[in-house]
Length: 518
Image (tube, rainbow, N blue to C red; front, side):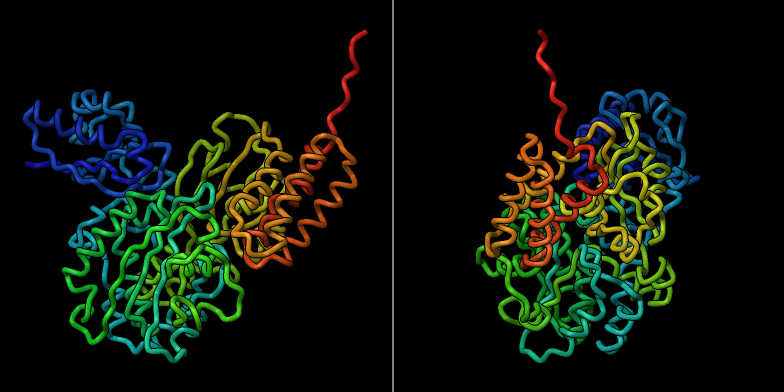
């Protein structure tokens, strides 16, 4: 009787030898005359345990990790194919504390299924949302998304339903759905994990969006640094087309929708929706002034929905389980679940999907397990390279759009990067300005010039040159960039700079002079 063994094909697992582990299992099984079926699944998101090998048993899947190719023979010796005990065994996968405490809606299938098996996708409730959508009027689909309280998961937190209604109400001969998969923020990997581990959920979400607003064409804009995601999405799209999910008649209906992958050239600013649209059109990735909004004049001047991967991947469960089901998760005006990416100096880095409402301290100390170095946490940056630095004194801040805004931060794409007490926050502030200077598209003066002046000003503070005067100048520069920049690149750069200056003033103090020995 064949035993099913799961070895991830996720990029994070591949980086630590997943292909070698899969090959070693196949070779060892052949040597021992054991019938093993290897399934290359997505990642469960417990990245400190990768390569996480799972074995299907009568009690459920049993997890072993982190597994190296050199561990495979000892796993067979320990009868791991029957869930046998081994130093790398963690018991049933679903009982691992990091995984068990999550609320997985968007990531319900990620790490569970073969990403390219449509049969698997259907078996685990896939396409139910699309089937429900096909039985509804487009306006009712938009209303359900609006009533769910879903907000843009790419960072802005704008209500998804309002954006959809704007495009639905627009009159045009052509409309588009654009998925922003240009995941460029440091410490973020949720988009990549979905595309590599459950691509059909993104396809389903985009098809539903197209039906809802009258769009017949979709594009997924993926950053070039994600070759595995690009390949997986391309294969999944072709399978969906062959199975009638995409094409001139979606699942035999009167609706038409097709889509394709477009690869970005690596510009961070192309994560901004208008710059992304310019890039899609074959132009230089430069920010457009708004208005007009992309919802009215977007791709090729037509009404366009631009949504993040996580926003679109949340649509199928909303259409399957209902707006009320999704809305009941979360707190305040932040509804549903949020896939939080824990990274940096952390014991248990990985993806943790949960309802809004956990505190930052819970995420870092309880779920993340504190620093891997064992040193005290000094700062946590939430929201990518343009997110604010939070000190431990703000760890009671709950993960909620409004709560973070009130504390001077932003959730962004929900990347959480942890630093211990060896971090120099002046250097981190300088990095933010330098990052903006390098990545600026150059269209607006506050971003283009302000960031360059910002680097120079931080350097003067570091050298002890008129520190108080230059701190005041740095604050003035940040104020100009925040309110004068065309897009969030220049507008959000002040968050890490000002939070570092506010919460860690000791790092901006001039170094004490050391007198020469006589």
